[in-house]
Image 1 (cartoon, rainbow, N blue to C red):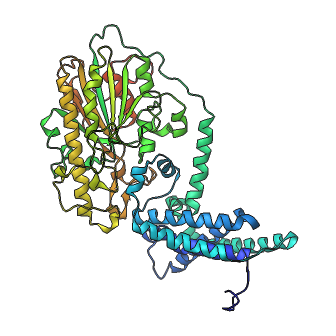
Image 2 (image 1 turned 45 degrees about the vertical axis):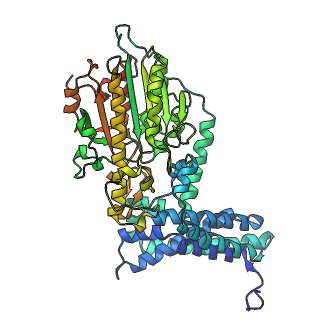
Image 3 (image 1 turned 60 degrees about the vertical axis):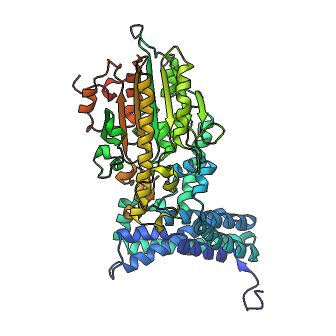
Length: 536
């Protein structure tokens, strides 16, 4: 075939790597160049710099391939990178997300249902056109391999030309590259395949490091004081992907919290998440470490809030309608409600409300001791927001009915998202009603807080998961709500309400729950407990 069209019968290895580098740079990095142009809009003055960015980027990709491809490894490595880069390009182009180690952690923790929500014809087209087709061409191409000294000399020549041209361009446009490197480090997260390769290296390092750790106990001194003769019943609802600014309790113009509005709840208006993904925020909110010191590696090898509660003799249950507890409830009683085997309220998917069918029975089965129950919602998990609520809650229309959010208007996306918030309002009101029915026998309370927020198309961003330092407010400003029963004499609801506009984060949850449960331990920090008035 190659001879018929006058093409060489074989292509030099370095030549193939150069072609692949150009292909990856030009066709799988739309998100990268789009973000570059947002910062450096094309003008007659900077057009040379922008062209140089493309050349330098291609040079980096070539050197990357040059380092990892050698004779027999060339085709397998190139084909693997083409396949992975096509998928990475789809998600970055469609949702303007980045593939960092946290995103890889999310992928590792994603279940089949969540993954299915992300499948689309567009993803298949990306995979076929940018992955499969070029891979087939690479597979069928004959590569002219050299050996010995000639191989070394040739490879060094190609690498030298690439490196020299890159250095020359950086020197020529030094003023631009100075700000590019110092002030816009976030752009490197959008590079494909370099971004996800770097993330994979960090992720694998954390994984193997974590395997070597031995579980470190904390809070072994935790106890319920003898003078505390009242039983506590605390339900903590861990929300999913909810934004504080979409709750009418916080001033949103739409009535998305009509039922909570009728209950005596306190909604904290200035509450912030530890991270921008479930895999980070859920372990973080139950960890002793503050967000500034938190990492999943350490969290996985250290006992958490639930362990401290069990040390004190509390009955602890984790009920989950999400993917899982992200390692938090590994040593606790755990019940999954993701299938109709346990959840009696399933239609297109199993509903959060199904967890409540077993809540009262669990309470009745534990006639002694305090009770702490976590309800982990499916909540507003995207991109298929229209699946997150039963049809009866579709109040705001028209709605986006595809996972291709870029194909919908912001109004349609917002309507579907707000309907899911409306369902959460109903779910939380049902939790409160169950607690009210147990108020005479317990000091009962509910704490609700979302794990992170969500981008709904603002500035071209969708979903969540951006690194904290570049994440928009929408991905980190989360709703937090407290309801306290009439029999909870130790807590002054007026003091809680007085603090509703103060700045709080997931760091406060560890100490607030200890305060709710009235547990004594050296770990407890009174100034981090949102139930305690700041002037006390």
